[in-house]
Image (cartoon, rainbow, N blue to C red; front, side):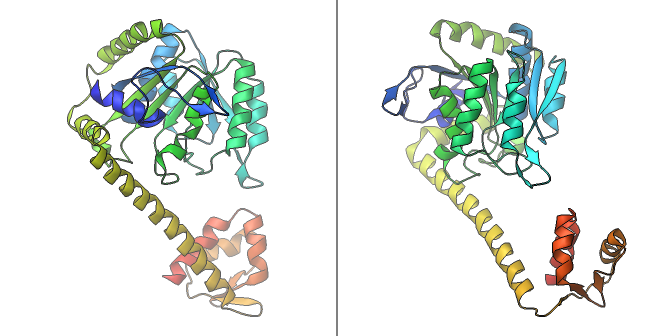
Amino acid sequence: MKMASHGSSLLFGRWRSKWQLMRHFSMNIFPCLAFGVQVLSGTGGLRVGAEFLQEHLKYNTFYYSNPTWENHHLVFVKSGFSQPRVYRYWDPKRRAFDFEGMVEDLSGAPENSVILLHACAHNPTGIDPTREQWEKIADVMEQRKLFPFFDSAYQGFASGDLDRDAWAVRYFVQRGFELVCSQSYAKNFGLYNERVGNLAVVVSDQRLVAPIRSQLTWVVRGMYSNPPAHGARVVANVLADEKLFNQWREHIKLMSSRVIEMREALRAELINYLILNIVLYIYHCRRDSRVQFCNDIFDDNIFINYRYKIYSVFFFFKNKCNYYFVEIIYYNYI
């Protein structure tokens, strides 16, 4: 109970009181009610939340992004949802977020469909909507009367800022949505094997808090009785203590910045590797199955005599074989 309360405050803002969440957006103050139930990490939160929505609210249709984490489909189907559907998210031709496709698919979703949304650090694409795009997504969901179910597995890891990574969830709350959000502390607390999580619930009527919590507890009781305590105590103690919380927050920033620096370093080294060579060829020192595979794809010796044709590189990427190209460069470089 203690961990769930602190977990919800992490998602919605540590400065808020236990029940009344207040947030200024354009000088408007709105009230809503939020509470949490401790669950078995993010997967447990998804399963408990999905079973509650299906059993008690009789929701049967759920949408998940294409692509998404493979367990999303399985968890919701096992929870009783009979109508799994997808919304477009990744455009393979443009290699970018398919915002227009997502909005179009959600615009055609039937009323009371549950929409599974990645709070931040979309898995597996790593590409999130902008704030302006989140606003449009909220518009469509409000118009179509769709129910948001957020999956927050990487809060703090996406940007290094806990508040920034929670922006989408908080924005939906500010808009007046009732919603649920599954929180995982596996990554940002390094407690993967301890199975620590929180299912945060936002409702608009305080009279609903007690009965919903009771039914969620009943779902947990029938599924795995009770979650483990050790990891939850670690999370609760860190979030409750200002000094520990600030120390943990700095660690999150350090990890996130390191990932960003690694990406930037890889990009810089690849660029240096390409521009140091001149004329039509770039030298490489491998002759193996990867090289032969690439040559066989196009029936052309793109990689010959330990070199590859620079003008073929663009054709290579255009035809979606960048994985093999990068792999060859990677093994050559190191």
